[in-house]
Image 1 (spheres, rainbow, N blue to C red):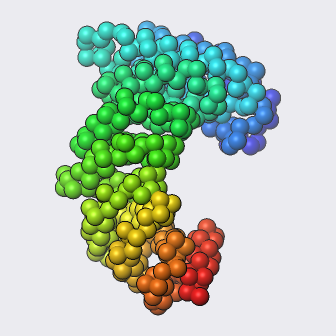
Image 2 (tube, rainbow, N blue to C red; image 1 turned 45 degrees about the vertical axis):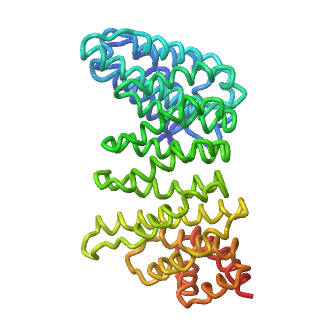
Length: 418
């Protein structure tokens, strides 16, 4: 909605709403919402060299954060709306204000530490404290996504200390886990020194099976650790895999959690390579069970879920194959290839599969051919009619990404066949 407005008009609107942040709550709420909407329209990846936020950035952030200190900040939900707007300002900021974040991060961190050290007696006070901790953690998450590693490193010991304490705050754990995920992605292997303190709390989160969203966030945390730390997570793999196996086996877990966990098997395998071997037998059994689940054609909700589940199985197989290949341990998955190919054959004849399943299926075929195509038994498996059928379907897709993936897969399959 901002395309038709000049920078001068946008700047005038922003200045006007900024001036309303000291007004009564009924005025502050729409002012914060307006700032949020303007920032949503300004976001660019990568950030622009400059934009209308640059000149007044410090004052705007100060005014938004000061809203949370007001005694009437619970009215019209202005505390929450102001913090959301502050996060949007950070996300939309231009490159020429990067220096501001160096001062903003310790200021936000000091507020988080003060909130953690505050005493709450009444239920209202406890709710306010948890809300503040969660919102401040969310701001730290946004800053770690936006700042360079060099800029955050000097603060990261204090940040992690505060975030680990935040995990023990009821109703703030989700935001704290997501903030830690941002720290992981930013610091990458420099996060390793926090693993001993963090992993037990992550496993605890994975074990809260009744809290679906928290369980999903923690599963995402495992994915981030695998991507950023690679084989440095190997000493903790037993605990992580046990927690994930427990999720899959538990019949009471919300069904949406299981596809995320199944896909995560592949992430762990890619991170630790040959060290995944102790988990192979149970993993293959669980993947085969998941791949055999079907949905009635007249139940659209179940069809959508089964497609999601099948995507996760395909991602897990691909991740395990690639991980074992990097660890020179492919021999341990070769006996499972016939079962994997049977699953792919099932998908080739399934009219209810969606485009994502089709894409993941041809990717898996490509991974098998690319990593194991020199083995005679794999060449034989690749010679089955359904392989060509899947390739044709993907190559004729209207989706360019699927066609590109299929072109790569078709090339490596063809190479394996010759």
